[in-house]
Length: 79
Image (cartoon, rainbow, N blue to C red; front, side, top):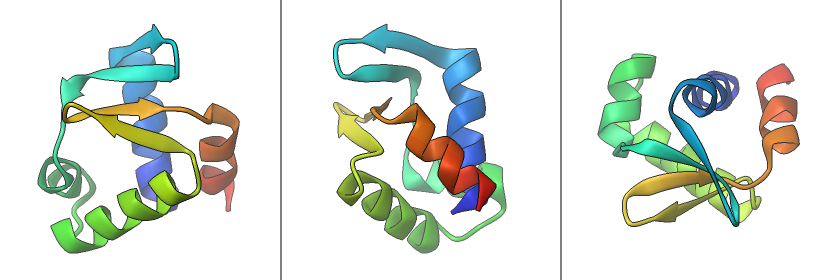
């Protein structure tokens, strides 16, 4: 959870575009892509993404991640 939150925050800074709902990552990333970057399994990353979506931290729109709650991701990163 910490590592995924950290990665999403880094990607936000380098590949983020402000949109109405938050910050959209310009990259189209799958759970498999994120898993490779993290050295984790696609299943665990997919599960964490679902958790982040349910918590209202992110949303997926057309295969792009939109970060809706930056402060919430920072909290996940810290714990």
